[in-house]
Length: 402
Image (cartoon, rainbow, N blue to C red; front, side):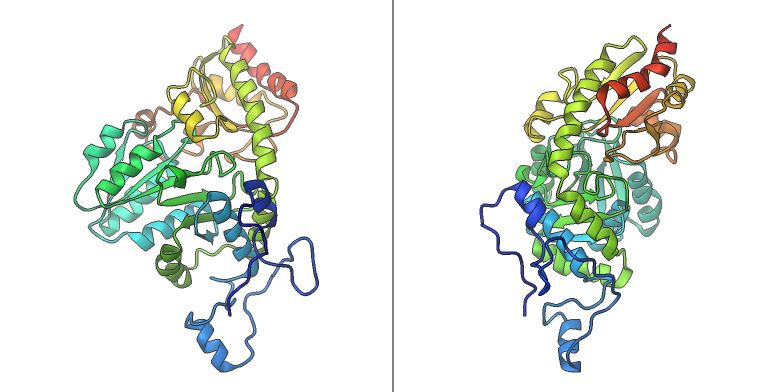
């Protein structure tokens, strides 16, 4: 027995896979996937159950590690990323935890961008550090620093591109070369672009990580995470840890993310177009010192970003206001449309102060090293009217400029 797939053309493109890949309809012929809210599955006899629990027969067994909705989400995301397999998790950080637990042991070494999400830094330094895993943090954009940091015990290179919130872009192919020369693996967090804009595997990445909470869901409804990798790695490294430790993605959340992926390309292209125009407007505003957005020619890695990201800058930007934290808070508090929250990837525009939220658990020295200053504001741009968003931000920015 093998869990079947939909009968799709071999050359089906991304937008088609986002809508159609997963599982065939049940015998009832539903056009939209059903929700399988069940903790376990019934087997016809004890011998069949034994085979299935021993992984000798491909079937759904127990929703901690196998469920139709999770399989649909996993297959859909793997197809979009152009990778053989995927495993879903309860959150993006759950995916990173699964990654580290499956591939690292005491005495191993990880090289990580110093600009990654603050919780990733804490997980490596504080939690895995106490178990004997060594980590080095280097410049996101300086390949020479990555090379210099390599040690005989280096097992993983971990980068997100673009980074949150500075939108720094790493050269995925160059980092893949560094990793592979050292006998290590390159992991790329693709949350900021999603496969609608960027497929890291095309540039040599071995593992692609996602917080499905962001653009994959797209409407801020659920938490989810995922790792895309080879079939062998998913089956033999990730699934055994999932069965034991249970960073499980719930069936309902998986259903939400799978439905979100159906509109991923349409949403992200529309949001990215609005973000580019908003970035240009912010760059010209006298209260703004600097705008961080890969779609702008002023971005240090603009050309690289355009090559890796399908010529599109994405739907997240950051900017520094004159004055610092007090002025940044004033701009944020002056908004009436933007949501003050710490997520992004929503159809609703989200505004946040990274230094005190997403990167609040880092020391000030760590934030400064990463370039995250107190006057920085991050925007995850949604689908509201662009003129309304400009007016919303202008309420606070104009006070600084006056």
